[in-house]
Length: 504
Length: 133
Image (tube, rainbow over all chains, first blue to last red; front, side):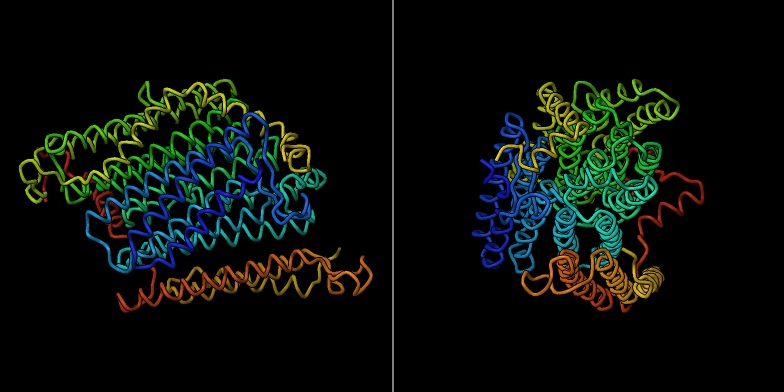
């Protein structure tokens, strides 16, 4: 069944080519993108099932065996990330189609939207499946290039301003990553992750630390870890709602995935633990303090996004089994919830005409459905039981307590504080946008009519349900996370699978 | 393998010049800096592989062959840099067309919140029953 492994990369790329040829024919473009992404979701689900039952699936692209050729590896972690990311991309695609139809935007500039979106998906899946560092770099570049196009869509002043910061920062992180790759190749003579496992161990400890630090720096920028995070809240909010949603859900998480992968596979033993934990604490606290000060929902959510990256880093930095499995669970939760919240913000903008908190009010009365759609994922983000955010945070806190020590204790305290402040930030949005009297400038509905297109509400609702559903399947999901964490800590399974011992 | 000193110095100069250009505010200069950085990295990668005869079996003894992998990686990196350069150039041009200059601008919303913080004030929107603006 290994022929399935390259499909999540190949299908979106082919789809992108097709939709590019169909420029100016929106209906055909929509059909192709939707078909391709649904197929990607199905393939990813199959991959998750296969990797759970049979172990990692490995494909040597081009037929050259492991250390010579490029390998794609779908182990449990990669497959899990594939499933979540493709579920999110499908929902966001439907949402953006709904928004495009509602706004009557069928003109030329948007014909680049579908190809760019599909290329972005291909980049994300390629990064998840990459079995060597250079392929990971290529995956990053694919998704970044697509994200530049999506972020500056239409080329308005505001987006160009935001795009300039974003592009330059991303380019810089790519340069750092590429430099690290060059150095690693010079030091070891290979870039295959499984091959590196053996060769890196032979290097002097100081050299290893330099390579590790450079990779962490590159991924830290992409994952928006404080102090490398200030580009994110400046650039994300200006993009169209679906674009921000998919960026928030996936791009930073690809960086986190890369950190998890390299920290466990290439540099085990937790030498960077202290740095990671301190950064995690700062990311959580500084991020959420930024969120509290904001007056615009999109910017506020961008800051919570940064803040909650800290939780993921917390789990990784502990370098324990429980820490990793909780971090993996939290990634799944956070991708879903953060995307949902940005989609809901798009709906708020549609209904209320703005996302600035001082121009909104009374949405709770005007649109009870919208209120529910906002409140459920918002409480989920803050970590109110029984939602998945609560479960993930409890897992992390347990891992922190089990780890022991002053730093882990500080992180546990910081995590609880961040959770409370998230609740405060969310409650502030709720009070101002939903509970006050409506603003006179807000659009009025005709009796019986609605300002919310069903094609936008549908996917949002689906993601809200998915977010709640994560609590229902928390047991099995944690089991998958646990198994992935065990495999990550052991490393041997990955290596033997790549070198021919695994499923073929 | 001992690295060639000339290469190392060139890489250092390229990186230094690149970094100082990237720190500028004008997008065109940032672009120049990125190109220099990219070239520096490419040379660095080239340094990582052994030099020698063309890596084609039959053209020379196998242990005297150059390492082809860094060259392939550089090719890929060059293609990516080319695309990025074109995009950044378009971005700088668009920025110039919109605002008359190509400098990286401040974020208004950021400035607004910073001014509030300097005056040690809240936004005031919490105190009102009705939306303010």
